[in-house]
Image (cartoon, rainbow, N blue to C red):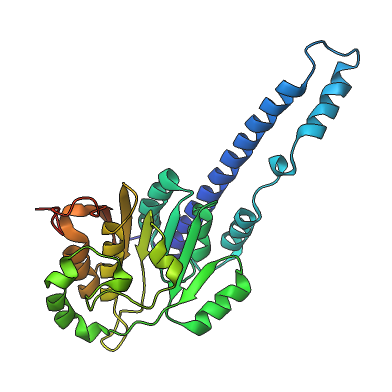
Amino acid sequence: MRPKNQQISSLKLLIFGVFLAFFLLFVLRSSLSSSTENESSIPSTPHPKTTNTLKQVKEANCSPSCSKIPRSLAQALIHYSTSTITPQQTLKEISVTEKVLEKKSPCNFLVFGLGHDSLMWSTLNHGGRTIFLEEDEAWIAQIKRRFPMLESYHVTYNSKVNEAGNLMDVGQGPECTAVSDPQYSMCQLALKGLPREVYDTDWDVIMVDAPTGYYEEAPGRMTAIYTAGMMARNRKEEGETDVFVHDVNRDVENKFSKAFLCEGYMKKQEGRLRHFTIPSHRNDSDKPFCPL
């Protein structure tokens, strides 16, 4: 096993590299767009002072964005280049989600949890909408002071880790396996107090990395995992939702992700991160809750 400081350095290098690649792609696209505009605006007959004319045309037609990176990306680059605090997920775990976001972004990305990796997730989904749901109001206020551009909401979880066994039994009932909008569901596992926009949005990617969940009296992730799976199944648009669950080395995350996101929908596990791809069930009432 590599020393901890080497792991941290590798993780920071990955994050910086991802943002750098994003920046280069942004600049390339802007340059190509600018070149196309310039070519269409330059007269076909060369002017005697061709060099100066071309320079003037380029300066006139180049938009401010073609030489600047988005402010959010610049802030992320600076933050992760200078911070000594790294995300809790490992380099390999982050890479799994990053590959999905590379294909899907800009998209709708819902994250249960607000942490040191939140700025990274939001930036990797540049141009899309990323919402964070957090249980700790004081922590939300602290993060908002540092990164006011992040969209986050306070959520209250009413179930604790020590209730997981009973909730697993409840989740097998017909009211929990019937596909419906979580806000109107009769299932005890469905989260009811989320912001309205969370229920009204078709989420392309969902990450469950909260609530706390690491001791018996702490809020558990049972309801977050179930609700994420139901949102994917209740998706209005055709297509699939990529759902990620972190900390699957723990009993609740392991059992509930297998039961309510379904082993048949699991694509990959990397370290403590599990990746599921769940199709919409809305237009197929005969589709079983989990693949047979």
